[in-house]
Amino acid sequence: MPSQRDALRNIRTFPQLIKFLRDELDWPIESDDFEELTFDYTAEELGIDTANAAKIQEIKRLRPLSAGQPWGIFFVKFEPKRLPVVALRRVLSRVVLKKRASANSADRAAWQADDLLFVSNYGEGDERQISFAHLAQDAEKSDLHTLKVLGWDNRDTPLHLDQVADTLHQQLTWPEDERDAKRWRETWRSAFTLRHLEVVTTSKDLAIRLADLARVIRERIRTVLAIETEKGPVTKLMKAFQQALIHDLSPDDFADMYAQTIAYGLLSARVASPAYDTADAVATHIPVTNPFLKELMETFLHLGGRKRKERGGNGIDFDELGVSEVVELLDAANMEAVVRDFGDRNRDEDPVIHFYELFLK
Image (cartoon, rainbow, N blue to C red; front, side, top):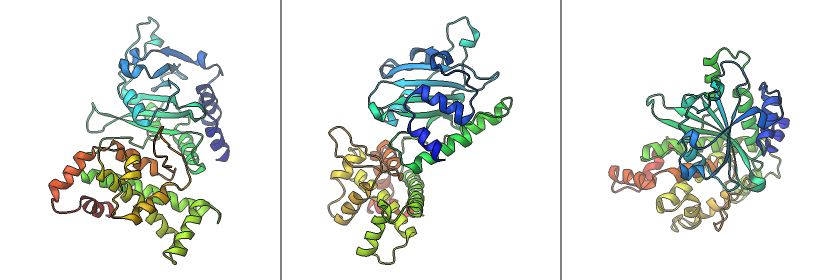
């Protein structure tokens, strides 16, 4: 795994990715020339509107690597600016793949939306990153597709890089039996399990989604504690809590405390100031009536990991223990609608307390 981890960390461009797909995932790629391997497309040919097309530098489609290949694989290079996942989603969710005008039938292929795989390259300078994205069809609503994203960059923790490398190896390796298109589709689609930035509008949905992410954070803390040395940042923080507050605090209890504090603190800030994004809300709008929560959140949010300092922003560090996923969920939620939903159900009850009961279940 370390070799694949290092390989992922060093991928910045599509040609570098092509070599990884060939050498590590057994894609039958016979050339190192990326231009030779691809067709050119325009944003208009993919049905992307003009406003979003302006963000795109180039679009290329990988030429079929086998007869009867069910997947249409596109490489989308965005302008060298910061592009959060929400922007990626907005662009690719507008894709309506059109048949090309060319008389060459091999160049006129079109696919169902859930047979499309997008490989995107975006970000600034040394922080350019690669993401795989798939438009997954809703099982109950045939006209509804959700963008699911699998991505990484050079600032990801070894733990996250290992997880991505394992997913790529298990799900996106080229199939041994190319004729079994049904199994091929199922295997590749199974790599995309994260539903990014869906709009949540009810307290119940938010509690369930946030609980899912809190469990992920708890498991990641447990894993880190199991592999860190005594000088590791998470281990040192746990020991500080043991010395100052809870002498018999176990690793499992610390992991649970961390996950619950992150979820409760970020939600509290977002509910207190629904017009703000989560980062700004945490910096200035955690209720002053709870100074311990505010101090604890600041301690936890500055613990290691990837920095997501916005230009002119507050500089809070969102670590790779799963905090970024919570932030993205809350940023995308329609918090005004969620708060109204709280109020409609429990007019005399603190909405966050009511939410927390379901969250804990």
